Image 1 (cartoon, rainbow, N blue to C red):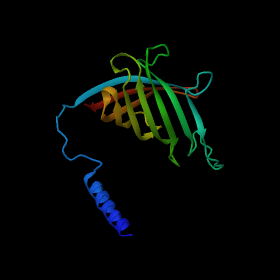
Image 2: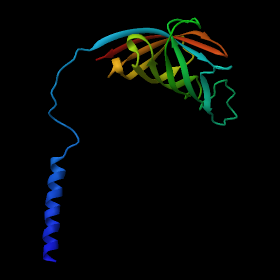
Image 3: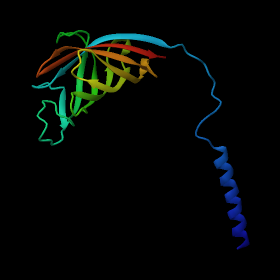
Image 4: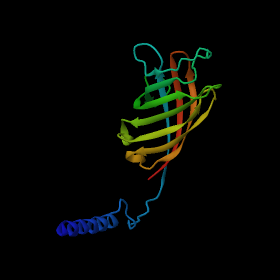
Length: 183
């Protein structure tokens, strides 16, 4: 019995020492400042809303009988749109935009969007930008936030100005002018 008590106290002291000495963070990390870079990008998002090559689909929609809007509140879309160098359908594909958009405005056509813009060609191949922002769909020019990135865009922050080029029942083409600050 006495041996068990001594062993218990030894274990308690050892465990408390381990807990005090182990930290999940480091307070002494070498600081080597890297200058920020600013990159300006211009490309076009091509979205198809119907037909054989649909790139945006409704995956959930609330059942509200009083809302007769063509894009009713509570509609959730998933997208896998092409990013191209121009507004023409045959312009060079440089990546894709994958993400979600939910119509979040009860009395307006405002969406909250999350897009990951993945680049698949050239110097930016393998890099991506993350956008997460309120997106007022009826405005002629919209601004959304760049909240992160990977590859050449690590620790990215910035904004994207979106200008609709084509908006109809089957096709959406949006010009993206993106300013990104990254390392």
